[in-house]
Image: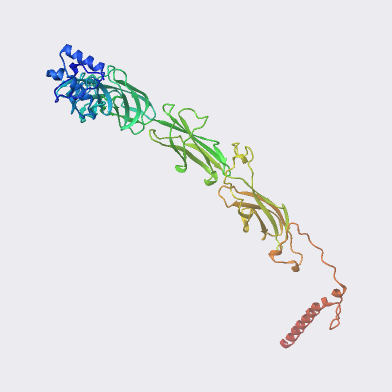
Length: 566
């Protein structure tokens, strides 16, 4: 066994170095070097007696014979406590032994918020206490902290830690100001906003103030940027939402938390409405009632770049007939939007109408209306066709004729606009022509009007005297969009041959009726029946005979009268 030098032994049983037994002294070159340094400098030495300064051999032997490690206690001493960012924290620690052990050169760790921030070796202070040779010096960040000194222990001394010591470090206050911002802007117009952040004092970071700032519109973030080295920031090409009444800039602090957040005062902001212009174009200035006309409304913004948003009302004679949303396509010019509507003229009266497009704006746009456009709606031509032109009949068997009413297909350009063809027909065409046909002889109506079903009917021309007549058949449509039409027929009326030929009006002669020869009389029908009395000269002599007798009677009466007078 190696014996300790007498300078490391003590006969004083009260000294922590006294063990009563021999043991090998721990080899701690760092501790010995530090102790020697302190001895030469005269610093860190406590008053000690000779036995404590130079332990006796028998005391070293008693330490070696100790079987159990001694307990320790660690105390934290804060010499300087910071209150604001940038101020120093100075702290030390003392480890106290509850038994004999040698701790010189052992390390004590300092933990800030659970993280080791520094270490210092122990030197002997005397009376069983060891203190840190080098104090902890650091600049803590802003916030609330806890500092702990921890002794890790050795083979003959147990570990221990100090109670946490709490302290708070305040952030450096800042001020944020908007240095440049517009007071108003039109919808979707980009703007630039400049701001600057300043601090009350310089923080621990040699680079100065850093961090980020955010531009707010009515408290809602629009853009976030990092500060420049001088604390300035420029938010460029920012589109402010419609309805914004104020702008502000907020500093969000730095990454280390040394600088406090701050917000600028509000900067008043107003959204200016963007003027618009509306035009209306028609596919044709006039069209038949069975056609269709396309209406195109174009809305142009005043700046020529912002696409208008909203709806368009299409008006006919100041009444709204359709409302459509604006839209764009690949051929739409910048700053414009379109709304298209196909008008069905069958829903309107014939004649001239005034059409207008009215822009109902979305947020940020001004309303506008087009110049009225004229549209003339033409009636749909009809044709009345009799199935025969020359008719024959008698007073008792009047002539009659079948007629058909049809819509005349305008074809290409027949209406004078070039838009009357089938390709421009409305999606809701006029029904098959219905109406009535009235016959006229001159200006006088002949009979009652005849209703047509699905465009066809039969007209009976009763009441005409014997002779040849021109009769006009006039068709009156049931739809106001259809035009009237007429046709003329020639009717020849001959006298009835015998009373037996008279028939009811329903048996009138039709155009294709032909006089039929009467059947030959049978012999039995022509045989002369015997008379009751024989006649002379036939049946025609009887009246003459009776006349003669009357004359004779009259002469006799005259003679008798003359005789009486004489």
